[in-house]
Image (cartoon, rainbow, N blue to C red; front, side, top):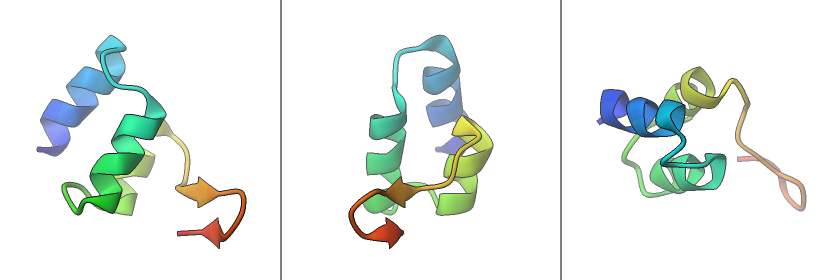
Amino acid sequence: MYEKIKKYYDAGVWDEDRVRAAVMKGVIIADEFHKITGHGIIDNNDGVK
């Protein structure tokens, strides 16, 4: 699933929030989120998730 999500993100079909939602649902892991977006998963209210 990582490859499909990365492809969607790179094509602009998915934004960072949608990729983050995939992590929260357990579809991909936080490390894969970082590989896709170049960012960590951060929630400004609660810190790193």
